[in-house]
Length: 171
Image 1 (tube, rainbow, N blue to C red):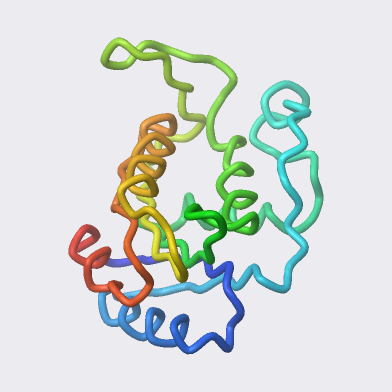
Image 2: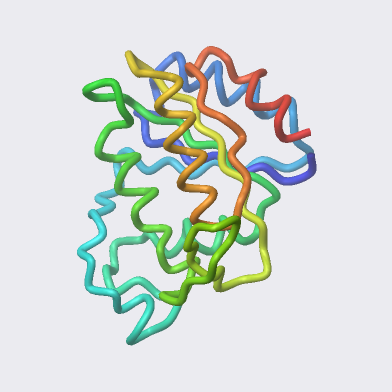
């Protein structure tokens, strides 16, 4: 794999983050890390401006646009996330919810199910490494559904100390 984007929603000084970044860095020719913990990335407000008013551009101006552009520039993205209530925490949920500008409001049928039409000719590849207690099977299912809706590829959800697992999906 050539270009890997890492979106870290955990504190930069977390030892598990350092270990994961080191392991992931060995699996790509180029790595970019965007740390979002200190950024005040707000949740999607459901205004649909990214579909209707300014297609592909989120109306919430809080720095998230950097992430949208980066998803399109890299071969794969791995998210580092905390957990809450056996699921990803609110920081990670905000990051994923805000990917809506990458698709259009239009839908089409794929394998008998309605899916959004991608805005760009780019197959997204997302993987998740999580820190804390979570239901791995459910996180994998969730990531699979997210990527299905975006016409992309799920690289899996793994505990943060299993970075090699996600790397095996991106090589």
